[in-house]
Image (cartoon, rainbow, N blue to C red; front, side, top):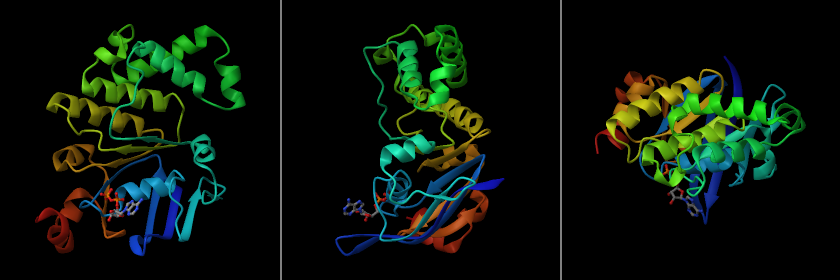
Length: 246
Ligand code: ADP
């Protein structure tokens, strides 16, 4: 596993308050990683930095085998470089069918290779079928997205992001508001997606994180407090004091 994303010594100050403090995180490819920590720990700001939404005061964010510097790149250039982000609330086109939503996501995928690859409808249809299978929505392809359950909408949006072939997918609290069965499906979906790319998940639900069965990074006050297996970090006394023991 080689490093795909290398965040090192990054700090962000908002109005004199140090929200991110000398943060260093390395993500491999492929890898599934969970990022946890109390409210205000800096989890969202970490994702904002990686996607170019927030610019740090200091530090480096390097990407890919060429160690491309993401700092200073626009949000759209970073997305084109292969970083996708899923926010907590599902944003699908409710009046369109599942198939149309996936087709739109495919059309939006940029780059010359895509123009060649998805030139014919047949190829696009095959890719849509593949994506629907990957997110477990094959039977729902003709359904209106607005009629899907909350969990199904989340999976559809993940499918729309996968249509862009990201090398790194950032996912914010995917299990929030889901039924146990939906959470189980989401675990499988993310685990499968992380076989061929990097997937970083922010989550609070410890049972869900246990099922992800991946390396965990615990943030606190804008820095890494602990990192390792869930069992390893949950035995760390500082983690218990600031996060688990509350
Ligand atoms: P988390 O996602 O772990 O809950 P955040 O990254 O949202 O934490 O926030 C980290 C800290 O930075 C918090 O104290 C928050 O209030 C502060 N913060 C985040 N964004 C801004 C902003 N745009 N302006 C001022 N403070 C912010």
